[in-house]
Amino acid sequence: MEHRIVTLPSFTVVGMDHLVRGSVDGIGQLWQRFIPREHEIVGRAEPDAAYGVCSLLTDGSARYVAGLPVYADASPPAGMVKFDVPAQKYVVFTHRGTAPQIGDSFQAIHSRLLAKLGLRASAGVEFERYDARFIGPDDPNSETDLYIPIE
Image (cartoon, rainbow, N blue to C red; front, side, top):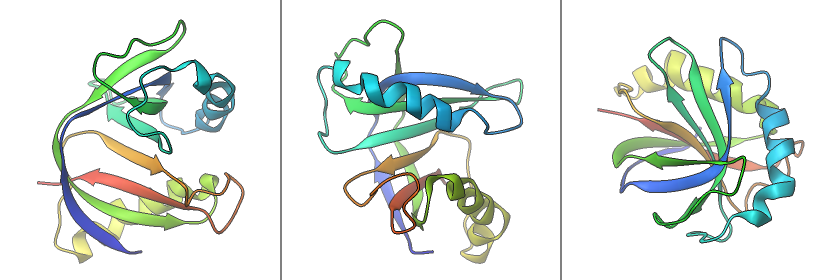
């Protein structure tokens, strides 16, 4: 998998969230509920991007937000949340394949690719960035960038 290292400023996402406890089941359904409502979000900062943001919680579960990047002063529509992603240094890998295969790419990154590159994940927010290269969730030619916080 191709990779690069970047440092990003903080940014804000508005979308819908899901609590992940042990299994990523439910994330696909979250996107299916979110996509028909994404037009309700006002103040988009990047018109052609979407994010899947994941933050670990103290009890070992994770909060996943399917959303769109917005300006910091944007307000979430009813039933949606606002999430601030802190400034962070990341290693970015490009996943090529279907959306259901993204979990396998994250597993490969954490189980072997980071160590192979001499990198170490740090506490922070991981996310997927979807842009024009993402053709569709079931298209094997889709590309999605996966951002892993590093030290």
